[in-house]
Image (cartoon, rainbow over all chains, first blue to last red; front, side, top):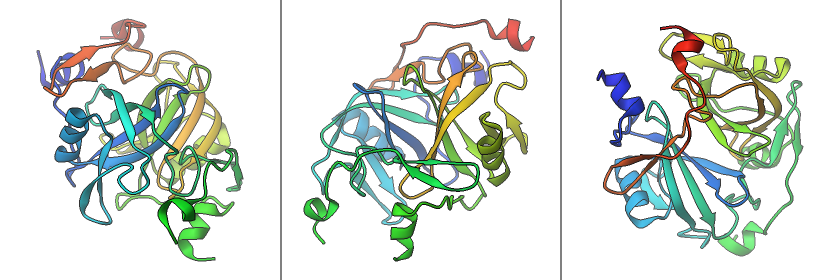
Length: 135
Length: 135
């Protein structure tokens, strides 16, 4: 079969990293279905995620791999890792051991946008970041 | 307040587009909670999405804006558009007027990956792409 067909309907993981060597990874709470966050993975972070079953990313600002929850304890335990049709996006279905967002919400997506550019807060605060990360 | 604080806790949409002028946008079925797809938006696509309430993206391969469903009729009606803490990822909570994936599944994430690189099909086929898009 052709390359596109193999990527879309094959049974082999051939992740397509961007020019920067990274692939976006979405984290979803497997129980509630809530989308919790999106971050980036390099090849090593993806392999670590699949083998250790803990969501692991690559920080573009810090230039290194990090395991989600290594500071906060809010580990994302990976129950299932999916890849999309084009194999250029990862979806992690996780058991969340604590809130995902460093701002203090269960999910990073705590604000809804209106067409006029206004944002409304649509989630309840889950914890006080200063108590978890220190000041 | 500082720039980071304003981005994270402000009530004004200030989307952070990448160097390529694009921001990733996740589409979630608002009813089932299923993550359906991820695609990219430029500023015009984001504005169009917010004003018209139809998920609209920018195709990197075709170099133009496209409304999801313009070929298939499988429009994603936007019930709520959220932005993440850093304002660099969009989450669209949608009513799906048909399956999201051009391969024929409800979601683009129809395969689960194992640590050995094998992929298992975990979703049922929803339609025959040849009948919807033509051969």
